[in-house]
Image (cartoon, rainbow, N blue to C red; front, side, top):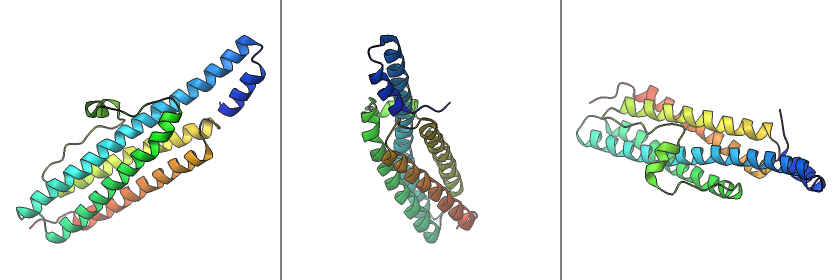
Length: 195
C-alpha cells in the first residue's frame, strides 16, 4: 500500500478537530519517517564499515606487494580503486546525515556500534588479493541491495522525503553499481597474479 506522507500530514492538519483521525494520520506519517530514518542509519553504518574495509584492504595489498606476493601493476591498479571507493563511501555517509537528522534520527556516534547497526558485517581481509576483491564485491552487492530497498521504500511512500533526496539515493545506488563493476573487472584481470 502506497502512502503519501505529505498527504497524511496535510490531511491530519485538516482533520485536527477530529482528534482521533488527526492523531492516527500523524502517527502513520511519523512511523514512515522513523522507518526511513532507521534504514538510513543502517546504510550510514554500512558506509563507514566500507570506508574502513577498503582502507585496511589497501594496507594488506601494500604488505603483499612489499613482500613480493603481488605484482606492482596489480597492486597499483587494485589499490587505486580501493582508495577511490573508500573516499566515495565516505562521501555517501555524508550525503545521508542531513536526511537522517531531518527525519529525527541520529548518526551513529560510537565506532563499536557501527557493526551492530550495519546491514552487512565487516569482512576481515586476508593476505590474498583475490579474496580481498571478492570481499569487496560482496560488500558492494550488499550496498546495492540496501540502496535498492531504500529506493523502493521511498517509491512506495511518496512524500516521505524530498525528490532531491530521492535523487541522492539514486546517485549513491548508481555509484555502488559502478564500484561492483570496477572490482569485477580487476578480479578478472588479476585473478592469478602471483609473483
